[in-house]
Amino acid sequence: MGFPAGNSSRGSQRAILSIGEPVLRRVARAVELDELAGAQLQQLIDDVIETMRVANGAGLAAPQIGESVRICAIEVNHNPRYPYKPNIPLTVLVNPTWTRLTEELFVNNEGCLSVPGIRGDVARFTHIRVEALNRYGERLDFTVGGLSAGTYQHECDHLDGVLFVDRVADPTSLCTWENFERYRRQEYLLRAADLVARFGQ
Image 1 (cartoon, rainbow, N blue to C red):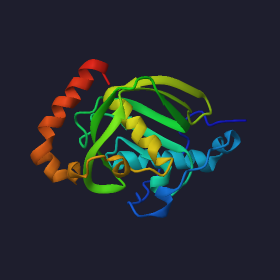
Image 2 (cartoon, rainbow, N blue to C red):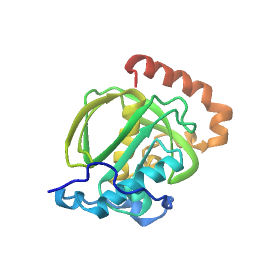
Image 3 (tube, rainbow, N blue to C red):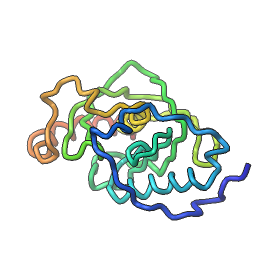
């Protein structure tokens, strides 16, 4: 079974679907290894990456561009949309699963490209183990903590048809991005800085 040696195709920006689109609520299907090696899935991965980067997302899942398969990409590189997030090198996850390594939770204020203009507080585990395949069918197994752990949990939720608004326990935390900047940013930055100091992530 031959995988491409690198990104042989160039990604195309795709439309990001918004809340209310049925595909965002489906449990995405697993990807078979021989399918992953094919040009169609490799092109989809490139499209996910390109779309994420153009939109300044910290991550993007295939269902968000209308493809109900268990693939997502995560990357934070001095992201202007999330300037407080630690950098994460480009990571493509195929058929990912995660398990909590602690019972400790932190309150993460999240937004989503599929829920434009809205943010809200979500409880996420502070330390998790992630297992997946990469785009070349190689096994990934690593741990992640702090704010970055929240990013991985958010993207994996998309593959199960879950949006962050489903996990908002206190609906009064929901606000526009503008009102987050006006009223909630400073408090959240203190929490975020504490997590980065603890976990470096």
